[in-house]
Length: 126
Image (cartoon, rainbow, N blue to C red; front, side):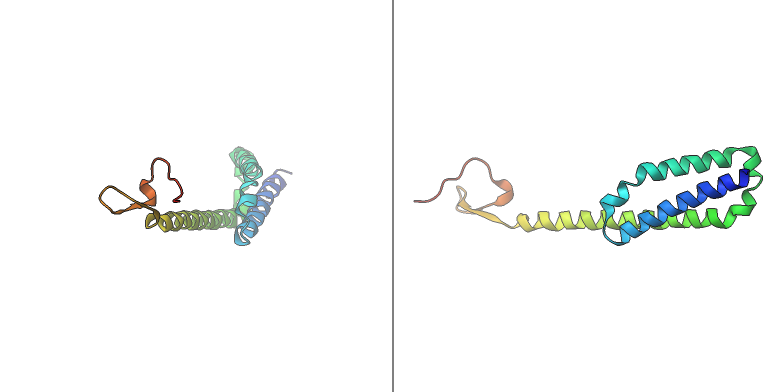
């Protein structure tokens, strides 16, 4: 039946989003990214069903489910943003650790050479 088609496709997408959310909340972002092809396929399938004029007439029956899908997708996007921001801040912190480091060598004016300005080769002292 046509209405079952929308329900099946929407339920499939909702299930994928639930799995993705679980992965994001348990720190498995890489696994969540691996769901991308499956999720895009489910979205495309649902969009195709909703583009059918006969099925669109029955959309009122599934408004709650479609709203839940939209809400889940927004929540997952927020989780991905939080992960991206966390990684960016971790990278910034790691880079700043080396900002004040010196190589144990001195320049021509007697100042220590910062780690970020190192060029050439350094030899061990005898």
